[in-house]
Length: 387
View 1 (cartoon, rainbow, N blue to C red):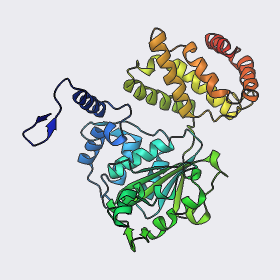
View 2 (view 1 turned 30 degrees about the vertical axis):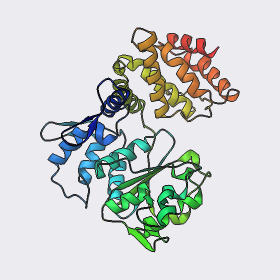
View 3 (view 1 turned 180 degrees about the horizontal axis):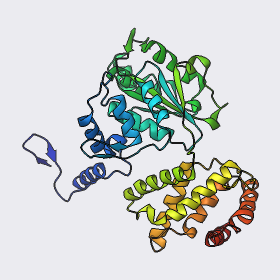
View 4 (view 1 turned 120 degrees about the horizontal axis):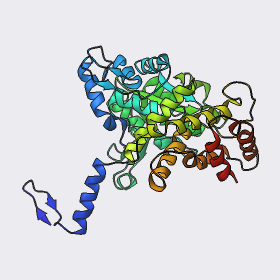
C-alpha cells in the first residue's frame, strides 16, 4: 500500500484492490439510473437561482418553482425546464400545496400512472433528497417505519441512541425533510398504523429510551398506493384522515400518452446507449393505441366494443414495450424501430392469463388490427409471434 500526503492509503496500481477501487469510482459517475436530484441537478440549480418567491421552512424551492420543475417551462434567463409529469396542472399544484401544510400526501391511481415518478421528483425538488424511502411490501416490518437496533451494540451496551438505527421516516423528521412510502396498501395494516402518531402528533416515541423524536419544520411524507390494491390492506379511517389524497389519472388523449412514452423512452435510451426513440414514433403511437383500446374496451372511433384483458396495460408498460423493442432494433436490426420489434412485447403485456387473455388478443387482432389501414405490417408481425 502507498501512503498519501493526507495520511490515507492507496493500493498499488495494477493490484486487485486498485482495480476494484477504480470500478467503484466509475460506477459512481455512470450509474444506470441516477436519483432525480442528481439527474436533473442543473435544472434544480437554475430554478433555485431564479426563484425569488417565499419558500416554506427548509424547502429548497418555492411551491411555484417545485410545480415548474414537475410541469416544465422556460425561466427568465432562457433555461428550459423539461416536464417530468404530463397531466393536469391543478393536480400538481394541489400535491405541492399539500406538502406545504401539516397534512401528508397520498398519490393514488391505477398502476403505471407515474405515482412513484412524481413522488421522487417532489421529494427531490422540495428537500434535495429523494432517497428517504420505505418500500412497502407484505413483509415490511414496523422497524422500517419507526426504528431498528444495531444488535451488536444493543447486546454490548444495552439500549442507547448509539445502538438505535433510524428509519428513513425518523431521519426525515429529525432533518425536516420529505420521506416517501411506496405501495402503502401493500404494508400490513398494523404496520401502516405506526404512521398515525407520526402524522398526527409529528412525534415518534422511543419507549425503550424514554425519549421521542419530534419532527422539525419542513418534514412531510408522500405515500403512493394503487387502485388495484383495494382490499389488500386498506388504510384505516384514522390513517386515511391524516392524508390529503390526490388521484393521478391516466393520460386523457392518445397524443398526451404518446408524448409521455416517447419522452421516457428517450431518457431511458440515452442511459442505455440506444438510438433516439423519435425515429420510431409511428410504432410508439401504435403501441399506445393498442393499449388504450384494450384498456378502455372500445376502439378509438367508438364503433367497436372490445373485451379487456386481465392486465392493466398502463403507460409504464407501454414504455417498457417500446424500450425493449428499441433494444431489439439496435442489437438485432438496423436501429429503426419496426412492428416486429414491439410485437412480442405487446403480446407479453396483453396475455397475462394464457387462457382468457389469448382469446381477447386474437379477437382484437382479427377484428380490429387486420382491418385497419396502414397496419398490415403490424398485423403480420403480431400474428407471427402469436402463433
